Length: 409
Ligand SMILES: *Cc1c(COP(=O)(O)O)cnc(C)c1O
Image 1 (cartoon, helix red, strand yellow):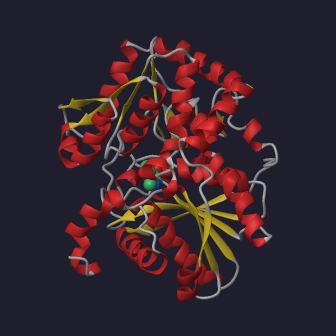
Image 2: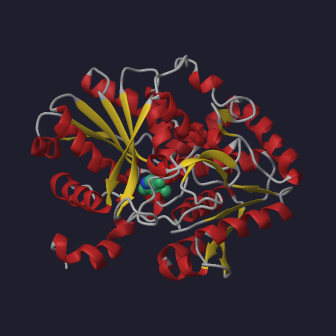
């Protein structure tokens, strides 16, 4: 589809619409008793995000606590191993706690404070969102309840221990398959019972309005920094920007700053073990329009509209839908969505480690994998990749499943 009449110079001011729509995607499909509360959050956010007190405090936190700005670095050896096209990384892996997630968790925590909330609630799958949110809660002195399936609790012992150490209550969910889906339901149910003192903190650019907008805004610091850093390093804009897409927060974060530039934008979805149902989580590539988890977007669903099973080697990418803004940007033709498989991600994980001394998160390795392919195709020019997180969290899994292939076991 061709780019319609969208003015990207004013895009973030006009998108989403007041009721949370990115074109036909987004909105807030929530129970009636929450409608007022979500409107309150939305109105408060619109006022707070323009107040100089909030902006200054968030800037100070980003600098003093998170360690921002994170650098942009040139991957000279990786680039040379492919050809003449030059690959650069935005190093979100160097953010405190090791990934971009803290960018929106600190924003959500500060918003909770401004709204006079005492507690934050969320669910977590592998525990990455839970740890980032627990970190924000400890920093702001907020109570924090994280709902987690019992199966995930057993698999992710170090993250459970981290959350507890940070003062968070990890609440086991023991019904159904005892994983993320059940944890989402349990967290939302708990929130419905106590929303006056509590805010539900969503972990990506998904969920009902205003979360896709707020999380994008909180993440946009990544692209604002990266654009300035890239131009000051090289004297020009990159030819392409690449980021992995689970829910789509790190991608939205880096891409927003480049929407109005002559820069090609690529989101990379996880192809897992292949194109069959249950073997991947490439929602935009293989999904269709529908409503899930409170918003309208493109999703992997069965005939009844129920989420299909998803899989990726990177637990942060295995989500059956994607933020509504990405569905919109895909329809507009402004962002191109590609895929990378488990195997390609593992190869990129190995190459970036050996050639650059950077062990990326398996999620980020998907973006690196596609950038390597693109660099070969482009032949010249430059690519900026969002390295959304570091790979320390993935070492045990990689040793167990790929230890022999990578010669590390
Ligand atoms: C959670 C996570 C992702 C995926 O989330 P998005 O919202 O798509 O950015 C990507 N990379 C890392 C390191 C993560 O922890």
